[in-house]
Image (cartoon, rainbow, N blue to C red):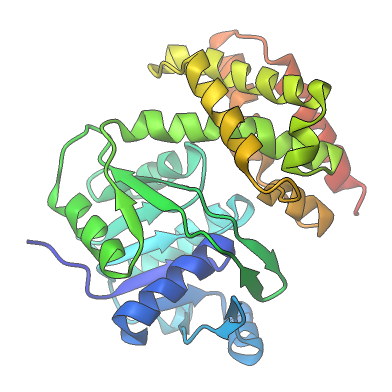
Length: 306
């Protein structure tokens, strides 16, 4: 049975910090190495990283300090820096290294497959966390869960190794029947709620208490449903209803990671959500006017900071 004894984590956003902290707390600092460029590593070493007020005892290495192939590499960067991180990670990727992207959407796995092939790629979708990052400090109450799977639905040694590694770190890890559908469905949610909260600078409660914003969120999700069909993924109206019910159940003053980004003047991951819907709409000649407008508005917000 294949085991992950030492993993590399690339990216210390909210999800990376949460998962990294769980891993080192349960499996020891030697089980995980955080890798980044030299300047960022120096900043981490000097300023430290906090999770719910506790310091994270991460072991940091720059790419120049790579120590050979890891058993697994977990990517948790922002999508804006993902391409560079995926290239640099070649320093720790060997022929048997398992690759897992913790990014939302459906694009990062496609990028990794183009670079490294499908053989050791495990598909993943993380859901249900409520993390907020301010500077080097992440706060959260719910870790959520990771859904992992092989694209073809098989239960490979790599898949079971990832599940066992995350579970041994106290993380909820599930293997759905169809990981690709799982990823698409979560992207549908994010394309609606993340973009609407970011454009209008509002909370979950703000969206669900305003019929116009609720309808806009639903319309953005419906466009994802439309472009998913020719990609071989059937998303239902019931799923949209269920996601909106979930949003309505969240803390009304909570908000999406994309809104947190725009409030902090950080580059957003709009390319993962509306950008993907627009691209696939053009590919399949399906109109996406709602996402066209939301993507345009988010790019305008980002441009206003320059």
